[in-house]
Length: 504
Image 1 (spheres, rainbow, N blue to C red):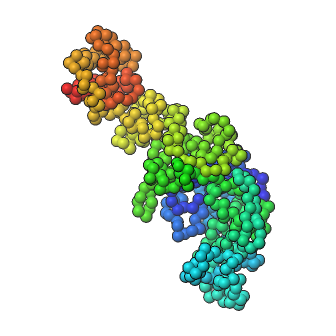
Image 2: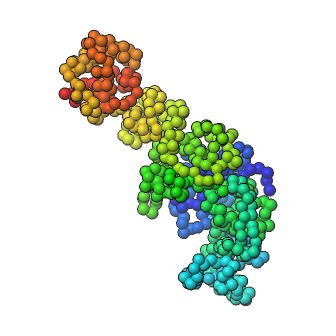
């Protein structure tokens, strides 16, 4: 077996990519990069009944957005392909037949109707050592009968022949020593009637042939481990078996069970990396990207769901995560998802990154809301001015949109009660003085404004709030003279004039 670390993410193309799936990708990726290894993407599309058009492309796009790009896979290629299981069908059949010939698996000819009858007849029925000898399979039928059924093309599946009296164990990289009693495990299907393998056979064969050294998956897969362990043993590959790490679940905010798509819909937050549109009905499930998350923040918050570096540090770049990641620091117990904390990560990253990094995405968000940006240099100044006020990228619509469009309405309740002829006269004179200015910079504007306030015997607070509302429509935004300087002389004068009409 190769000494080089090789890990894989093997999603099924059945729909949106849950944040738990992205965290599995992330931990695979961090481990591989920390150890100078390779990260492989393998598409597990053997269940054709659940295949959803567009889902594979969606998964690839999610990984690209997150910056977790595979070293090998359906797009990147590599020497261990094909990386799509539906293209590897003949490979699995060969190993399934080998197991049958060695008595480690068997043909089962039972029809779905016969199995339903058994389930109705026997509570908690399992197709395994307790009942396999009462069913139609190559363990109970004569060799001649089996050959006849095969020759006639009778539908069959191939099931693993689980021993009934063994204890099988392995050492999990997170949970430590784990053991199973094979008597409690049923004879899982390895090859289906359509000739496609089940997950159980495919994952073992592919991990062996692709020389996977470490396998990370959610703890919900732990009950499948004895079947996989037995397959590694039956196929004679025990020495090549990857080291396994079963990751803790991401839990609902109240800690009561695994976080699901329904929880997100119920509580108003995304659980998918990106928007997923169901091709069967057009229903869109929202994603973190479209809600306004930066990929850096998304990756950062996922890393902290079940892992920490042992310090109080919470903000990590991908390079820092690679440097500091270790399986020893992965928690055994599930991690509660906290959307408010997730938004905090995003706000911190918006503050952290340079305006240039945000420019294209902010321009896209503004454009989506019918706010067109003609001057990208001006946009950079505006981003620097307001980004500390934004939690999500979508907040730039309210925090930056007024730089490009005058207010459609005003917070009149904040102005009218104290509005009078003296203040109105002040602003008419302020307009006159503004039009005389050559340099329309924040410092000059502030100096002019304060001198006029003093000359008129007013208090600065009496007219500062009305000016802000004239420019932006409400009691928000950065320093008011910074706003005016970026809006420009002509637009500032125009906005004051329009507001004076509305304030009457």
